[in-house]
Image (cartoon, rainbow, N blue to C red):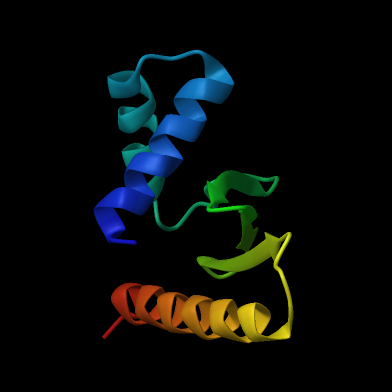
Length: 104
């Protein structure tokens, strides 16, 4: 999933949750991201998506020191091989995300 796609999903989730128009939700999300010295939220932010026959839940937990913890759950997997495949995919995706946000 590209960064733009993840951002769009977060914006759509906010718009759905708050009833805001997409552009208003986008402005709020981008303003939150720009205010890097302040936590984005005091409570976890979550996103739930279907992936084939499985369900993916992403949780973003604000942490002190301008950090965020990301937790991914992928439920309704069919067995061990699928678990290992998805674990590898998520590990690679989260590593790319971490590299993108790593400060020089």
